[in-house]
Length: 194
Image (cartoon, rainbow, N blue to C red; front, side, top):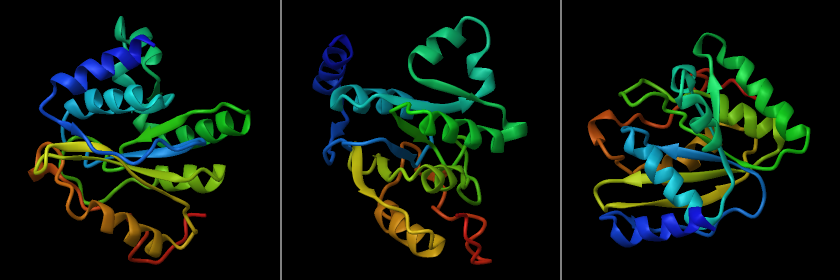
């Protein structure tokens, strides 16, 4: 209740507009892209709280150090040790298979810098759990943010990523110069991640 009230106040006062499709009705992998600023975190919480979506999100392990750890976990954070990122996929899959219900927010373009490709963890998690993927976005050019369509991944990486690229083609992020094109390293080789 308090979270929804805070979110309503945020959207009433913010210069950003919430333009969104309805929240997914079942557990989903929520893509947060383009991820170009720390402010994306605030927008993500405001979207989730306004729509009543219970979210978990992946964050670098250092965010959970000291006094921040309990706060970040309370906000839905799951620490990621970047030296063993593959283990996180296994842990999240185990949580879903154990019956935990949540929307998992993933920023596949990684840190807030221009990278060469997206990380494939979101794809592997969605395929291994059977969860759909919801396309969340931030677009500074229109000052809008929200949730786009929820799609089922087919296992055809190229075709799935073409659909994702089409949605994000006109989404700039908060800092457009740091935007990463939605492309997985496996695409040129045509490898399947299923």
